[in-house]
Image (cartoon, rainbow, N blue to C red; front, top):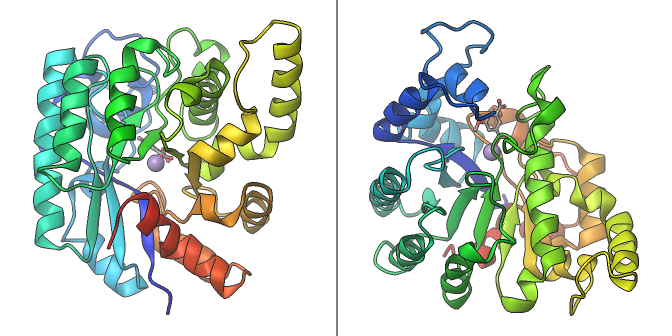
Length: 340
Ligand SMILES: COc1cc(C(=O)O)cc(C(=O)O)c1
Ligand SMILES: [Mn+2]
């Protein structure tokens, strides 16, 4: 029996849920509003927002989550404050609620250290205080890395203002998990209809765009040891990596893109790992392993947005070698997220 560590497992606290309800009732133009309203304010004026009953599963750790982990043989959940995290709040509220969520998460992990690990949050729009929180998360709180959800107020991670956060994470060998959120106001255009704002399409576009901006801008020349994790089988990038590499190197030759020390494919292989969250497709997984290398692929459920049993069945039925199975199911997670 292979140890199973699921690495994109969503969770929240009542204080963040309450603040997101305020966002849901505010006149925000953010595309996250469709999802936030559907989850955190569904019973209030639900016109067009689609009620989705995830809140109980997000708040819960021991009532339903842990018994299901026992029933299906999932040893650990790597818990992450669910998207959009604290990033829709003002910088002060975001900083305070990230620290509160991190304290609560450390308590959960301390109480059941063989069942739960956790990624700490921060407020990207207060980068200096965020860098301090990264140090507290990895030091005093003893958590396993960081989580952030795509853009913040429309800014992406090629923007030098975020670099104090990368500096702290790189120095502490702390992996930053870039989870999706709805596309930014400048990206959202035709993504506002047909539920394309979130998991079906907009999430992949949002994170994929962030990843490419980081790679193409030379962030990893500045922070060569920085490790980023993304979910959802690499947010479409693995399947497009040949074309991304070819077209970026041509763009560099003709001066359309800045010169970088390494190629896009090298940055993706050297500085990224990705999980299988929400893509339970054996063909996609086999391609991703063969294309990007087994050491870069990590199993995840994406609970409670994905039901637990099908995700366990998916990985247990996946055809692979024993070495691949150990890497996928726990070995890579233990290395990347410092799990004993
Ligand atoms: C933050 O809210 C989420 C909603 C869903 C969904 O299935 O509607 C999926 C994800 C996800 O894929 O992480 C996240
Ligand atoms: Mn997720």
